[in-house]
Length: 290
Image (cartoon, rainbow, N blue to C red; front, side):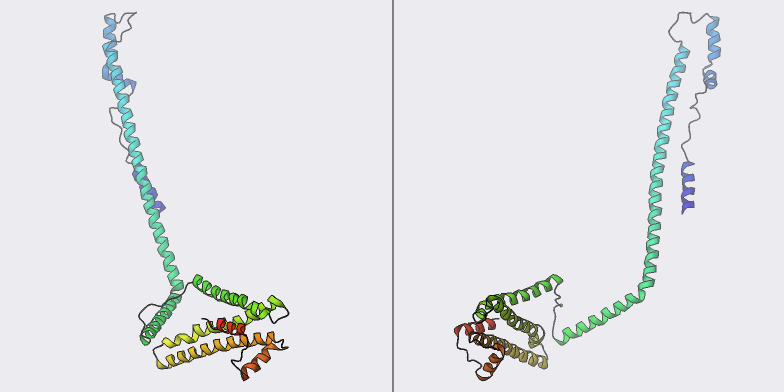
């Protein structure tokens, strides 16, 4: 490419505008053109011009006018020459940019081919895996009668959901802490620990059941629907079991039991709904709220 640029530059500056032949300021040519020597001899023979004459002769006026015209013509010639050179320089810059763009395009294509050669097998594997997953998705949608596209939660959405889960555990622990504190010597701190532990079991258990088991109830296959229905019943029983456990544990704490969890379990086996305190029933109702 460098040799082509040099050859183009030589052709560019070899075609300069030619200077007109008649633009000559040589003294001999001017003297010969206006026959100044002959005119001087003629005037000298007549004793002209006089010693005190200040007005130029006609021939001198003609020479001055000729020189002014020549000067203006030479200036115009140099202006035209400068404009021609400027236009050629601009053309050279444009041509250089075009050559540079061609070189960059060629380099980009070379790098692209190199990358495709190096990563071709990996890209083919990715394309094959994507095609297989797409076919699996189509089969799944057809099997389950789905027409809409899958809804994938964003990362921020997942963070928000799990933050709400932790918030629910904390809120339920705070609200229940006062009820448990009535039967504990450690006061609100011990009540909050008890309440947060039981609230975590309640909320997390319901969360996993609702995320992985209960949605099967909307499945088209009969087996899936039956599993979903059983999951709904199990989730309801789980919520009731945890709620009654919380109520019985509170009653054992209020009774001053040495081992409140064990005695609460024994009481649940003999009298499952045998709660004697209104606050305990309030805790059961609160824990069963969706």
